[in-house]
Length: 267
Image (cartoon, rainbow, N blue to C red; front, side):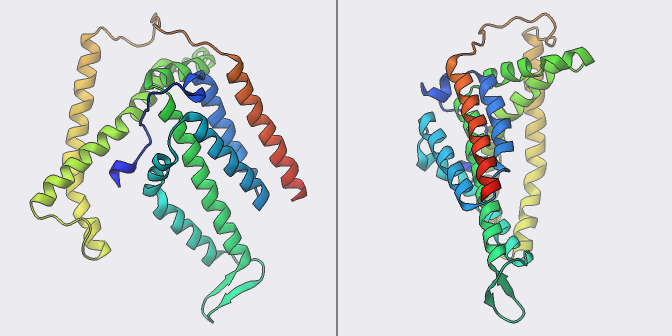
């Protein structure tokens, strides 16, 4: 499962999404998060699905790779679906077991919320898959620049976010190594009752935290050795360029939002 996590991964490429300005991609993600919550019927969710698949195809990231990235959240998706089936009491009864009644409104709501979660993970994952950590840092710093007037450490905040994303796959690899080492010593992570499995994961935390603090210290020492003193007076090797494709992408998202609002009203 750890090998399937795609958050924080970067895949080099020359696709349209790779060439876009990181500021446009960050703004696009924020707009898409808002747009997803506009969908409320089968047609609007179908349009969002087409948009998500089109974005993946434009990124030139294989659909199989994106499917593998969804595997770690399948449990959350299924749990969300079951929860809505059991808790939502709307519409006609489609299944009656006496003590358990399943309503078509619950099934519909469960499908919609599950699709919403899948769309969010797919599209937001494209940000890190098509954008280097340095570009994400520069893009965040540009977008947050107005907050410098209120003395917010914008550069440090953007750098912190970028490093956090970059170290997600590193920490997952470290977790996998620790698990394999403990399994070689007789630890069981996939057998036995759920309570025992949870208890088996507790010993992972101590070496994982120690390793994380060690990596953080090494990174801090390396940055100090290279003369890093924060964002004051720093220059950039690469200058970001906002192009026609960036404006077009944001306009497309705004059009998508308008279409969903209309279909939501008349759905």
